[in-house]
Length: 220
Image 1 (tube, rainbow, N blue to C red):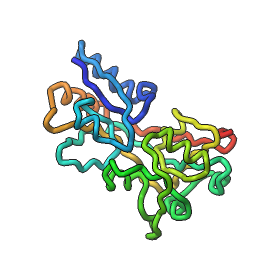
Image 2: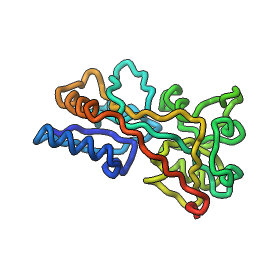
Image 3: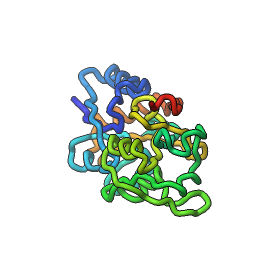
């Protein structure tokens, strides 16, 4: 039996913790498999609700009455994507307070506000409003807007390892909370196969991903 899973990363199989989870699941349940498909942050729950995916790996929080939040598989830090010639780039790091001085990419209207805000808050820690700039629906659109100098964007730290774009620098956000990624599925579609994959993830435990930020020199 095949479990169709949605993962935020196009290169999910390259992530050692995810590869280990899938390989362990296959070993425990011969004849079972996991198919991976990428989903876009602008429509985070669509694949689950349309049946295109049986599970998704989503950053928390997920507060949807029709979805079950399972085990946390990964945790990681966060980075701020800025243009290589952006004033923040030379500093080597950023803070959530910095966001109040710059336009942040708008993730669109299809994702719930609470879910978007958990990654790109509406206010700084001191209460200043964080202005929104141009809208993007895909990750590559985000990087294009950042490279053009139109916006900045908070992202998850794995971006620095698996994605690059000419003219974009990733700065560690020193005061951002860690992102938790959890397996999530539709309550109405829960099955023995889904429970088996979730239990495999629980048995392995949560893995913390190392952060590998780029420098301005890497962005040229």
